[in-house]
Image (cartoon, rainbow, N blue to C red; front, side, top):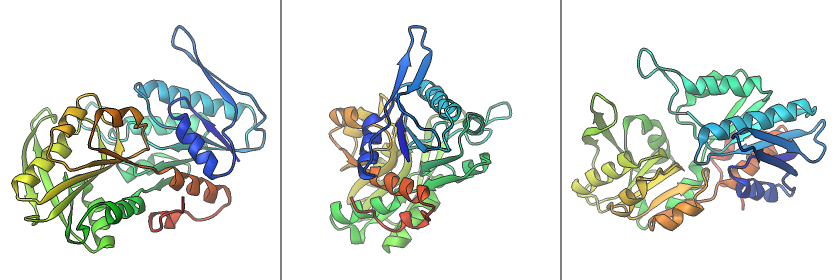
Length: 317
């Protein structure tokens, strides 16, 4: 087994490698003045099972091209098997045609990965599970659910009487699964957007949250308008306290002021995306480490074991 890291999140790859009791393979990503990317592996990986870890940086298109170059390099140097570990799956929100003349970009990305020589993919909490069907190779979609449950039980006061809330209809399945496993009630916010599909015109709460601690759970937050608007709606509906837990905290530039000025007690994210700079800008941000879940998944796949129970059990640190 070899762990290779892209340039987006070397510290995460190091954390995963440390838990597997190996080191990150010596390699070098080079950016030329004309913005071209070059990659070189400085040790033999012939007949090895390579796990390439990549997340996202400020330019996701550069991250994708870098990843494809790394995969292609591993294929050319006779690696036995190549598994891409995408802590955050790019273009996951473009999983269907939004309009009659629009692309399905996540399908295009799946094709590019397969053409580059990838044998399998590990990712976490896909925005839409249907993306797995875009591939002709195995895709293991692991989940942070067990860590979310652990965090709620250990860090949120009076969680036993709380309500789990989805900020939109798309997250209903995730919220119902979480609520069922914890023996809690759930609620859903139905949002209506304007014709441009950018501005939220109205929100309708379905469920009873009066005088209850409310925990909003979502898979991804970018501008954070949906989560913050949902929190405001819940506060207006007499929620006692409002927390938000988001798996992929993409957090674009305008999101920090929205979170800091919101009624949210805490805004909890995982570290599938680098968060060290975000913590300095958002005083409500709390980060859950998921490197151990990925390390366990990699170890099980390498040894031909099942990973289906990773969503049920919290791996030991």
